[in-house]
Image 1 (cartoon, rainbow, N blue to C red):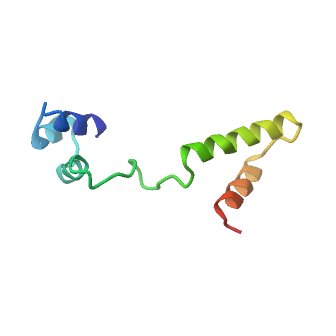
Image 2: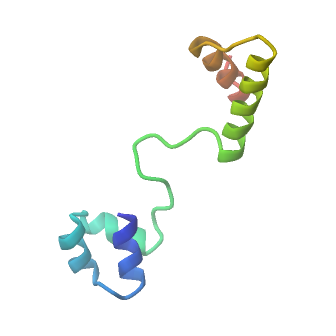
Length: 86
């Protein structure tokens, strides 16, 4: 999809041709080219920003180095606490 959008925006292809070549739905490609869809591809959008994810990873690594390894369950608890869920 990203490649198709780049080719259409660059003038190398029309929307119709890009759909045929890349197998993308025409309406979706048209909306992306026009800037109506700014979200990442996929059904669920990320809860944390890139910086927040890096911070979580760093803190978990530090805790692990100190002798307190995190299990998957611990990670879920920390993530929930960070987004404000109880």
